[in-house]
Length: 334
Ligand SMILES: [Fe+2]
Image (cartoon, rainbow, N blue to C red):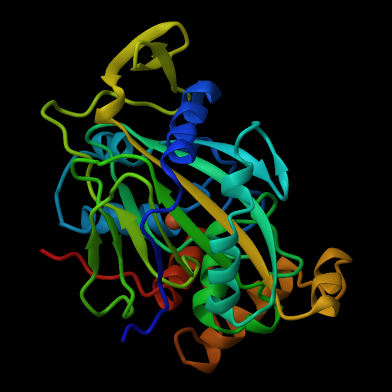
């Protein structure tokens, strides 16, 4: 038995609802690049939001230890993402069967043993041929710390440090696929980062639900006969009609693909509350952490573990020390 519980949905929907998800993806039309996430003020200012994952990917060359230029690695991992629902509010009509999927809600309850399940977000991920998603754990949530205002790498450090679990809000994540993708396996480490991973082939109208804030995961490279397109932040992937999709830099077409060549997944995340008072404490911001208190607590722990002495490194040096100390990235497979 795995250390982490994973629920599987095969199939996820009836045929009509599954094909409506593909139509919805086309109807949404245009997708921005995920790398356009904000950076943050304070500690680690100017670093990418997920500096922990970027740093690991650059250090290891990804799960399979490939060595490529920084530019190529960036093009491979800057995939396309848009939000289909925020909280229980659809951002596009037709997402409701996914947003309120009873099977997801039931599996989420079982995952964390918490009865109150509240959808947090639904988003689409699109990868083009040659793209992959670096191994990572998702950005978790803690009372008072917010991925839009605070460094995401720090929030990931908080989870793996185990020092702030009393403030953490357990989240269940489902990932569903609407492609029989060539390559693009969903790779995850259900038995922990030091045990062998599972490379799960992606099939049309299936889904997995797990705790992606705790289980390391990523996406293997989507099959490609060509070198990867010269993708840069700011580009968009859009519908071009007749089943074609184009990456555009403003008006300029950078690359063109058929729908079957892309990899399309939809993710669902939900908060899992133990009871109503806990849900209220979350909503009303009682008992919130502050980032200064978090960093002070982490530094105190580094001292207690004799990783630092009286002189504590500052700035980016402290950032890297925190990531390397607490986030147990799986090693490259060689
Ligand atoms: Fe993820």
